[in-house]
Image (tube, rainbow, N blue to C red; front, side, top):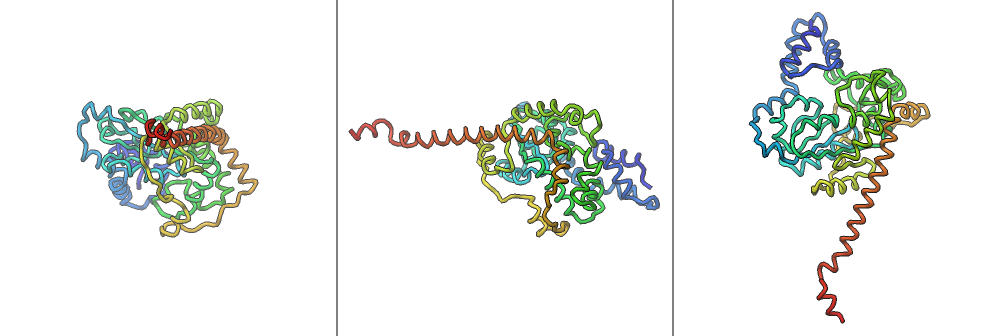
Amino acid sequence: MISETDIVAGYMWILGRVPTPGEIAGYRAHYRPSDGDSLRDFQSRLLTSEEFRNRRLVVDRHRRACRSSLDRHRLVFVHIEKCGGTTLHDMLSSQFPQASICPERYETIGDWTINELADYELFAGHFNLAWCRCIPGDVSVITMLREPRARLVSLFSFWKAHRPDPDRDMFDLLRIARDSTIEEFFAHGRVREHPSIRDAIAGQLTRTRAVHALEPDDPILADPDQVLAEAVSALEGLAAFGLVEAYEDSRLLLNEALGLRMQPVPPRQVLDAMVRDCADLVPLPPVVMTPQLNRLLDGLTGIDRRLHARARTLFDARVAAMRRTERRKARALPWTRQGPAALGSRS
């Protein structure tokens, strides 16, 4: 029989971190008390996990960073779930050597040493904005936002489409989604207190520690106006950001702000296409936006909707400024080609 002590010890010795309450509960539920080989199997799972492989890759290629590598410019993409991040990650990856892209995708980036982080120039993952402070050098941070209610509907559909699987089912929200209607899902107490659901965009931009459930004193519940103010300030302080609803303009703005030459790519992680190509997913009927569902979504996105409205205003102003600059450059081209002498020769 596997105990909570076994699980915590395994995570500490093999992955170098404390497991989350959800990970503990998931493994306890996965193994039957009569299974004598459960501890060995659990340890094997950790040793063959992607998280452990990524850590070993870093250790294998680790070198002592010199001051010049610590001072290098670095780009960080804060990937908010179901905000078009996989598509942007593909575009960003085309602009950097593969060896300079950090393999870490989660908040455990805070467990890496400064010398390990100094090996990379591009970071892209589901980590809170606060974790970007641990990355050395001249750091530019970007993100993508999406209309919050549409983000939640997409998130539910993605989770619900997954077939049962012992490993995936350790994530309780996925199990709840598969067994519920969309209204039942967003009315569920565990879902409504989860940081990936309630005002998750503002939370990822402002939260300074890992949170697995929103307690009554969490700022998102206790002081939403202050969280909004902090999220707006964080957004305005980024090097750039984009909107899923205006993806091509987002690509152009990011290129201009970062000095990149990203080219368009087909959208990634689109559920309809994934269902056709992946045996682990099942097709779903379209979501019907009922009055009850709209009320539930409104109650879960109060801060995020206000933040998105502010982001849209700022984004539109930046797009307008970019287009004015492009028009000025276009008008200047004839003068640049011909010069004053050429124009004077017409008289």
